[in-house]
Amino acid sequence: MTLATDLTQCTAHELLALYRSGQASPVEATQAVLTRAHRLNPRINAFCLLDDEAALASARQSEIRWQSHRAQGAPVGALEGVPASIKDLILTRGWPTLRGSRTIDPAQPWDVDAPATARLREAGAVLLGKTTTPEFGCKGETNSPATGITRNPWNTDRTPGGSSGGTAAAVAAGLGPLSVGTDGAGSVRIPAAFCGNVGLKPSFGRVPAYPLSPFGTVAHLGPHTMSVRDAALMMNVLKQPDARDWTSLPADARDYTVGLEDGVRGLRIAYSATLGYAREVHPEVAAAVQAAVSVLQALGAQVDAVDPGFEDPLDITTGLWFLGAASVWQGLTPAQQSQTDPDFRAEAELGLQLSAMQVQQLHLRRGQLGSHMRQFMQRYDLLVTPTVAIPAFEARAAGTVPMDPESMLGWTPFSYPFNLTQQPAITVPCGLTRDGLPIGLQMVGPMFGDALVLRAARAYEAVQGVARPAMD
Image (cartoon, rainbow, N blue to C red):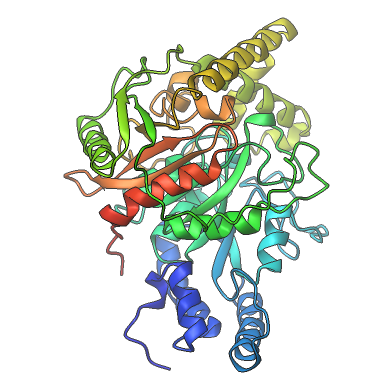
C-alpha cells in the first residue's frame, strides 16, 4: 500500500486511526521507522540497540490482530502496532539493559520485563529497541564512554538533554512516536523541552518501577511522545499496577483520554517566571513562556503571577542524587570503577563525603518542601513555569565540565524541585529560538493531578500545534 502520509511523522493516535481504517498497517509503519532509524541513527545516536527482526515479528502479529478486528470486531490492544522504544535503564526481556555503562556484562540472562515494558507489550506496542542514556542516568545530557554522544535532531551540534536523551532524540527524529523515559531531576522533561516533544513526569508511584532506582524516591517513569494525546494513551497503559513495586499507588481506573479536550476555562493558574530564585533565564525562553501564558489566559484560565515561595532546593536534589551515585559506585569492583564515566565518578565521590546527619537533614528539608507545595496547590490548580532556563547547549563528551551541583543542574532550576515534591509535571513545546531550537512550557499539577496536567497541556497544544525538525 502506498500512502501520501509519511508514517514516521504520524503520532500514535494517527497511526491507530490509519490501522483502524485499513489505510496503513503495523508492518508498513514499523518498516518505515526502521528504515529511517538505520539512516538517521548514525547521526544522532538515539538507539544503542535496534532489533529489526523482533520488531517486524511483533508488527506482523499486530497486523493479524488488526485484520481480525476489522473483520470480526476482535479486540486489539490500546497501542496495537505502534512503534515504541525503551530507555536503556529499563529491563526488557530478550535485550541487555546496560544502563549506558561498560560495567554491566551483556552476556547474562535477560528474561525479565520491567513493569513499563510488560505493559507496552500487553497493549500491543511494537518494541524497536533501547535508547541511549548517560551512565546510570547520572546527568542531564546524554553521553557516556559506553555509547558516545547523543545529538539533537534539531541541530546535531547540540545536546538532546538527558538522561532520557536517546528517547527524546528518537521521538523528535520520527523513529517511533512513543518512548518510555525516566525522570530523577528532570530527565524526561529536559530532553523533551530541548527536542520539541511532550514529556510527562507522573505523580510518583503512578507508573510502577522494578527494580527501583538506586537514586530513590525522586525517580519517576513516564511517557515521552509526539503529542499530548499520545501521552494520555500511554498513561492508560503504563499506570496499571505491578506488585513488584512496593511504592506504587493503588489502581487507577481513570481513562486519561476522557476529558482531555475539556480546556482550561476557569482553572486557577499560578505563573512563576523564575520560581523566585532562577538567576538567568534565557530571554527567548522567558518571552516564549510569557506568550504561552497569554494563550492560556485567552483560553479562559485565571492566571496570577506569583512565586510558590521556596528557596532553591538544588543542594537537596544533588545531595540525594550524589548519595545514590555513591551507593552504585560502592557496588562496583575496582576494575569496574576504572571503566566508568568521569562525571559519574565525580558524583559518587561527592556522595561519599556526606555524613548520615547531613543526609537526614536533606530528607527533612525535602519533607518541608513537599508540605509547602501541597499547601500552595490548595490555592491553584496548576503552576506554570519554563521547563528549562536555556535552549539546548553544545553536545559534548563525558567529563568535559567539572562536576558540581551548579554544572550538573544549575541550568535547569525549574525541573528538579518537582521530583523532590513528587508532583506531576508535563512539558509541551511553546516555540523556537531564533536559532531554531525548541522551547518548553512546564505545567505542574497537584499530587495525583496527572489528568489535569494532561488536559491543560492538550488545551495549549490544540491551539499552538507542534513543530517537527526537518531531518532527512
